[in-house]
Image 1 (spheres, rainbow, N blue to C red):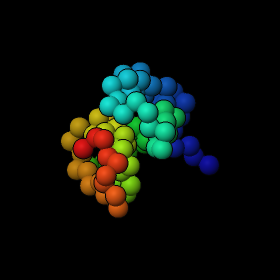
Image 2 (image 1 turned 135 degrees about the vertical axis):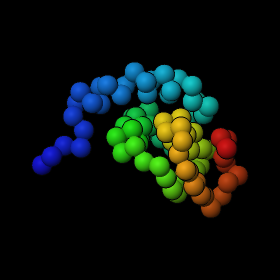
Image 3 (image 1 turned 180 degrees about the horizontal axis):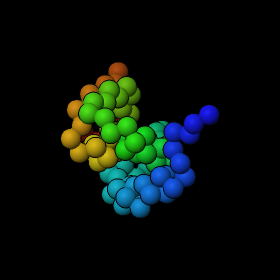
Image 4 (image 1 turned 135 degrees about the horizontal axis):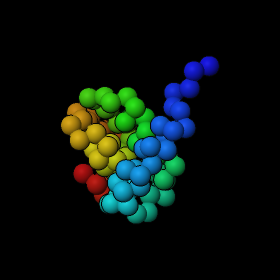
Length: 89
């Protein structure tokens, strides 16, 4: 089976991810992604280098923020049934 990521590639993403993650606006994201899932999303977005993302489920907005930080020129559509919890818009 072919790997999607090689270890060296993941390691190469780490320094930039850490600098981005330090600036996250939502410090307590207990109901959402932590650092491990955030790094996974960051790596996938970098690897795919896509132009459009449809995000289903915003919660506080951490992943919305991370998507925008990772891909500067992204066309992002983010939806949720309840937007009252959102901290990042």
